[in-house]
Length: 311
Image (tube, rainbow, N blue to C red; front, side, top):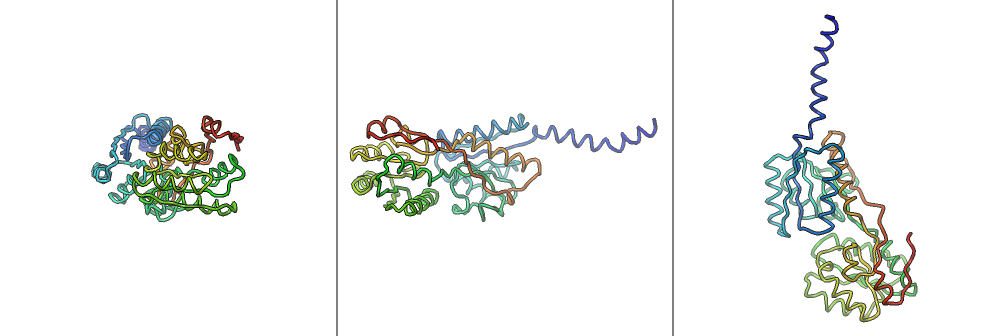
């Protein structure tokens, strides 16, 4: 009996430690920064929270801050999270991740809805971040989207690319599109805009010169997609895009990233960090691979085209 008591005395601290670890989610505080309220970004946030709860963090405290598109708000929220000593920061979009990375080098940051972390200067390398930031990329499969344009219109020769030059993400996507178009022995025509009031004139020029148009994810083309589509449809031509929310605005199709799943992927990264199993410095940026073919059948019918099968 004395021997048993001695054993219990020796192991009781470890039992308490284990029990404390099981209840640790009650003390977890996560700051969430989001640049604007938007269907895709909201979905990524919801996926993150849902998955963390599924992983056992039902009692974690989430502090959500929406920047309303104001970069100064991003910096303010990031500094607040740093001062509050959050256990982890979820940064949704490039400006939020940049602000968070500038505000703390100690608190782990998981970012999502960013196309290229390395090009945005958020990490040293997408394969090994080397800083307190990791996350999940929303880079759409540009090669498959360009191929979709060819599948819709096999005799295509020239493909335009219209993108915003105020953000590194659409510039990177435009570069990938240009490379793919050239690889297919077709002719690319790239045009950049920096303001929404430039879009109409550029779209009209492109519609007269190319057989189809590709637009990456960026706030300028997303906001003006109805106008871009109208201009191209007047010429009997179509627009392929990098985000499924553009389909209802007039684009003909895309291979879409599921943002809810993207958020769940980020949550699984966060779990590893919170449990001490890994560090963001060593965790590669992850990419969503199971993209879904989304088509606008009304436009396909209007242009007399045939819908391609899923690949």
